[in-house]
Image 1 (cartoon, rainbow, N blue to C red):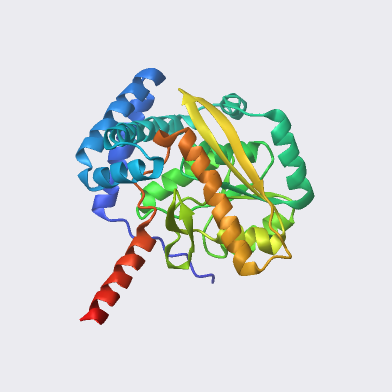
Image 2: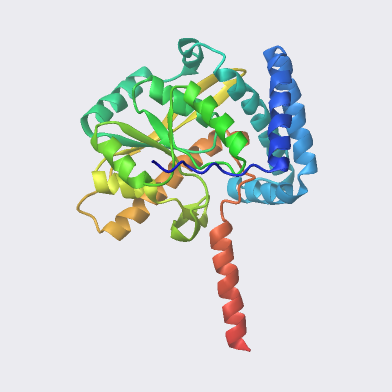
Length: 316
């Protein structure tokens, strides 16, 4: 008899958070869109005022990355929280709309997309995006256009919220795959002349590639670069930016071609550097739409702190 998959344990606190969020989502979905968005924007700004832990670091990172004054960075940081509140409300309504109605709200350059579609059908591709604008809609839109079938997602710690989010994503037409065996699945997809999508704007941890991001060294996720090199397939770096209530625009910054004749180590660094450059371009276009509350430079800062500690110890 086959062994049953063990279900994750759900704590009382996780159930409480889940049902609280479901109730809030239900209440907001009952409101007209503009009222719900206004309410979400206010909640986001309140969250910004309460969240002291992330607020100060966000303001410093925005000012440093975009060469702004502290006052200018503070204003953008407030809009970041408002944006994510509104983006969440819209995401909760996506599965209530017919696919053709939803995806008609995404504007794009048709000639450019046709060129990328042709490349995908000939060679496969890696579609790189980040936590900017409406990345959930970006995933659904690319599936709807026939670029790909789905994407790999890191599960949430709360199993109930994770399942709910998964259902919302699958309602957009996406297949959601676990991280286990990700690189093999991705290679099969790309070699099968499809696009494999991934979010690549978060800290890459100890295994990441150390390259600049907004002028500072940052550990960068390597999977997209490794996949491009193994499959000799291009990387498209794009994003779906929010332009207004339920209005979006797909922007593709560049197509990055791996060089099979280059030194592999140097080529990984080059691709990661170019990928970060493209992601930076989107963030500069709409800085209030990126997750500045994520500690993007965390790994390198820890490495530098550890190195400084070692040097101080050696001097004693």
